[in-house]
Image (cartoon, helix red, strand yellow):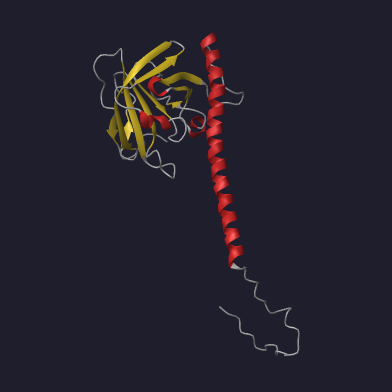
Length: 236
């Protein structure tokens, strides 16, 4: 509601009105506006590139520290944290020989863990063991190479107990709102999971890209990896 002024002040034509009348701000000329817009655009682009570069640099640096911790684990058979305040430790080494990929797998699959490397879901079978083992990673860093895998490609999982080779038998896209991974299914299987599509602008969508691999030393095939659900997601 607007207030009604019963006794407005008279306007004195000779009075100095600059103290109470707003003067219009000077309008920048077109060339100045263009320069300002170009500077703002360049600044935003630089910040985006800096953030993306830091993510990749952090991932690369972490893998170096993880390699050292993993070497210590192989030497004495004990778990070693990659840095003093880490709440995870290396549990396996994942290799894709045809692609030249060699990564340390961490215990856990929380967002905090996946920021530094692929993570093993503790609810699934341990990497390299009998049962269904699930390892997840980010699509734009550690698991970007999953898009290059094809059927019959070899994967190798190295643990403190030895190594086990797998062959890719399937790649598929699932909706985490409708399907979940059955980790208690009998049989031996390795599932590699990441977000999909790989070139998505925004992170956190419901679709997951799943690579299924079977051990070369296992006969036959295991059961279905997925079952429909309306309440449980495939991966966080």
